[in-house]
Image 1 (cartoon, rainbow, N blue to C red):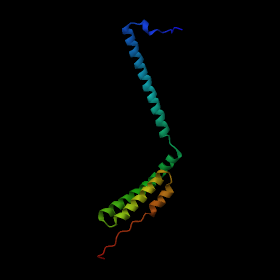
Image 2 (image 1 turned 45 degrees about the horizontal axis):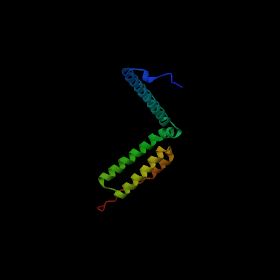
Image 3 (image 1 turned 180 degrees about the vertical axis):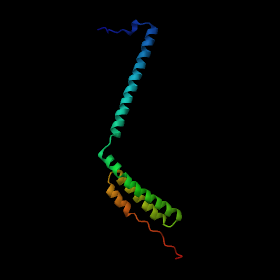
Image 4 (image 1 turned 135 degrees about the horizontal axis):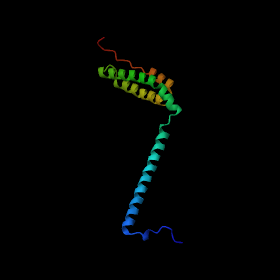
Amino acid sequence: MPSSFRFDTFSADEQTTIKRLFFRTLGVYSLLVLMLAVVVTARTHLAPTAAVAAERAGSPLCAARDLKLVMLIEQLGETKAVPGEQLADAFFTMTNARELCRAGRVKDALAVYDGITITPIQSAAK
């Protein structure tokens, strides 16, 4: 059964033009499909969920405690008033509290922040 469109009936120049238009059209459709895939992927990954909403609601409380603790760790580290191991433990505990905040467990995170205690070394001169 012969096809209704016979490519070999066109001249060489016409065949070149048809091929060029075919590949341009193919490129445009490929670009549109790629853009559609990006938009769909972005919408599914950026859609707010309950955990994200909870995280946003608790973030200012966690951020305030985190900032206060970071400043204390920096201050005590610069003055060398606390052993490095104790500062490292406080930092790693703080990262656990950050993870709890990101998970939306703000009350648990605040309890972890409040549980971090850093006691300065008493000077031998006193």
